[in-house]
Image (cartoon, rainbow, N blue to C red; front, side, top):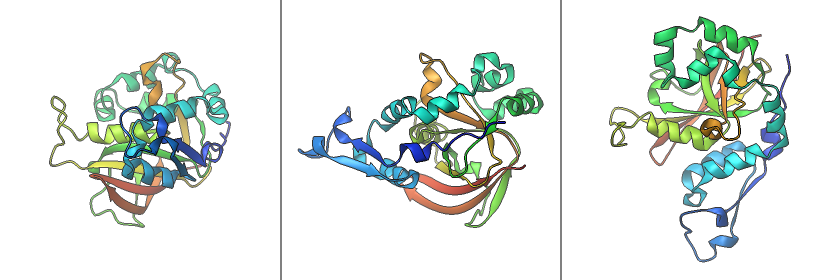
Length: 241
């Protein structure tokens, strides 16, 4: 089973030219400003705090699509259209609904048969609500993922999911009992396995840059911050050999 190369080490430092923004600039000289991010943690802070990062999801999607390491990742994975249970999982509105309707046995078996080891020190993102985490979850505490979980390489996708998962579907207003939560996941050993989705270039879901993680992952909380109404939780993750 192949071990993939670290994608982050091929992307950072990452330069964001604010002239690529589509909507607005904050100053007259904004077109000449470069935002430099040297690692994924700087990316998180810039993305969530700096209004000039507007349009980041689509911009970063283009960065990933043109990256040689990401192209190498994709070449190792089948399209979801050739994987019955993974494809069904993707077509179901939520993972909880999928597991309620179909269970997890077939999905887990297909996922293990079509996954590779992800690189140590790679950072992934997942967006949801605060119910993703245990209650009274402090730095140093841990919990396990015993089912496959969707993550993404694009923080913009995770950010969008965090707010959509916590919003009333019809009007898009945040539900008062839910807190949008962004998980920043740092792979800390060589045993985390996942499937990287190889969508066709015209597939509307290709912007997700999704990585479906195999189950039996242990997550340790290393930090937490709040940026503009979103809780950001930093986690080290470990797989099982």
